[in-house]
Image (tube, rainbow, N blue to C red; front, side, top):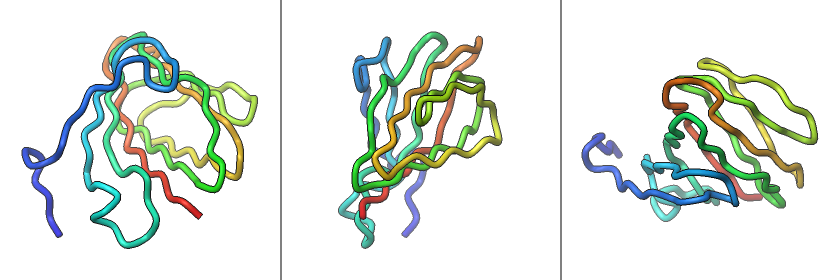
Length: 115
């Protein structure tokens, strides 16, 4: 299945997971289009200063691949800087958050797979 960029569903989530600002979610595929138990397969766009609040992942894993920009990530109680090219795996009950600390949009590919 191919989904062209202009065919993707787009939504804006205000204060995502209790964070500041608005995150644009551009779905690559909706969960019902994927056979494996998936909750999210999307591109997340966080403008400067925007963040996704601290939240946990019970019975699921989330993969972040940083496509563009810079940010501050909290994962499993540790903070670290992330930038384009970095990949992060969170799950098994761990919690994480991310904030755009740069001057350009932070663009992330995010996939949540359920157990």
